[in-house]
Amino acid sequence: MHDFIYNAHPARVIFGPGTMSTVGAEAERLGMRRALVLSTPGRRSSADAVADMLGLLGAGTFAGAKMHTPVTVTDAAMKLVEALGVDGLVAVGGGSTIGLGKALALRTDLPQIVIPTTYAGSEVTPIIGETKNGLKTTQTTAKVLPETVIYDVELTLSLPVGVSATSGMNAIAHAVEALYARDRNPIISMMAVEGVHALVSSLPAIVRDPNDVEARSNAQYGAWLCGTCLGAVGMSLHHKLCHTLGGTFDLPHAETHTAVLPHALQYNAPAVPEAISALRGALDHDEPARALYELAGQLGVSRALKDFGMPEDAIDRAADLALANPYWNPRRLERDGVRACIAAAWAGDPPHAF
Ligand code: NAD
Image (cartoon, rainbow, N blue to C red):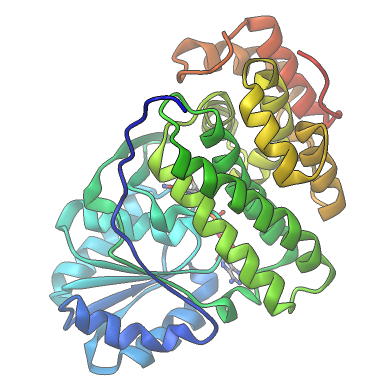
């Protein structure tokens, strides 16, 4: 057992089918009288249903959330917050909607209820990334941590299997890197193992039957645990690569995580025997990187960055960018190895020693 500091983030988590109906009571608990409900354009119907449940406590709906939290969208939502005298936020959706809620909380300190509908895990992190003039900057501040999270499995039944698979892999990536974080601790490592196990055992069942409520519940449980890992300890090469690739080549967030994860883990494997041993148990496989690659194949999602429009001649640039301003990493970052790691993710090859 090594020395550690464990910083728990406060969170009130309400878990179970039908729990969306508690939103009014939760809003009241937080002192909301004029809550604004947020969603992406595609999820307006869910946002309207929540607004109906809020009744007189609802001030309106803003269904304009977009991926990567563009400040132009936040500015438009801020106008509504001011015009309507909003005193609380209810985000209904995935990381994009939750990002908008956090951006508004950053500017106003308003309390937030989040009703997540994907597995990305943003609802339990104090992290906010915002995009201005094409540049995404990320900060960590307790101001954006949601006060209450309602995990209602019923809202996830409509999540397409492809997004379910990739946002689940995105969540697994948080737990994998938490297991070898410089500031890791035994509580978060325990959550990471449990979170990975819950997701790897539920995602294939969801792909077979998207209406499998039990598998969907397990995936939500896993997403919560993995998101908690992301919020609690530092991330390394995998997250750095995904942020660099996503930001520079405009690649889709969760799909990029899915393609990169087996290779980033393979790169770090020689330096992190304890994490590999924990992942062997969670994944029930001797080679964790290989297991994640096979899982993505089994889920039927792409494992190749080239499928998302990344040109082959961008591999070198990506390697340079990943090394220019690196996150702490358990294994020393060597350009040839990092380049080979990106090249394998680009091609969709199985992970091999880098
Ligand atoms: P998303 O929120 O962008 O949703 C993907 C698509 O699925 C959207 O079109 C959305 O409308 C749709 N959708 C969501 N839930 C649905 C449902 N139940 N049924 C049908 N359609 C549904 O995807 P995401 O992967 O959850 O979030 C990605 C974003 O979150 C990125 O911007 C990423 O940077 C951010 N993120 C932030 C953190 C953090 O801690 N700050 C963590 C993870 C991800």
